[in-house]
Length: 271
Image (cartoon, rainbow, N blue to C red; front, side, top):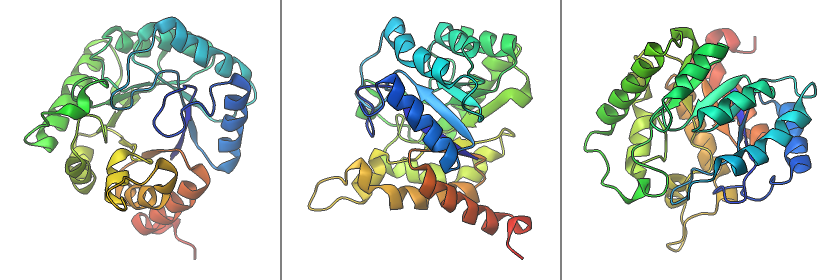
């Protein structure tokens, strides 16, 4: 499944400021749906490396007008990307149907209670450290062990709060407190995380490790020039067992995912 990214923020690493105005965000959401997105992920707080925390009121002011504007217009499910249970609950009341917690319940344990209360899917991501400092290291010696253990702890918290196993989706957190090499290792060994027994979401779209890989003259490739690199990681993620890929470039990645599905699943192939 393709999850389209909609950042209603002024400072996201790839498209910050483009969709800060509600009417622009609403049009972008409808465009992504037409382009082939299966899900839409709306966020009002940037969690890029080095970002500062956004106040709850500001985060809410950014996403609520978009959710209200999309009500009865968008046919695909909406996920709310937030670390706050109060924001998640208000977003659900405004039409969101999925919670995407990049902190894996470390920021607000009540998030799991909200998911259990409303019976909505809960995406639990692994993040080492906090957005403001996570790329300063030190990084884990064994990234696979670190991510698997962190995700198990998040799942345990969710299950204890009453979240059903069928509601839980796991995200290894590419780019969140990992070295560039570790991001590739996570993609390479994704089947090990699939063995945890939950659907996997992978978000590699336009991220910094791709910019470093595609650098020229010592300068990282800018986000808009990382589409082909993203395509390679999306393909590898699907072949490794990812069920959902979170992307900015829906038109291109919908094609990539369709072909990768045909490689991975013979029943999808054109006869």
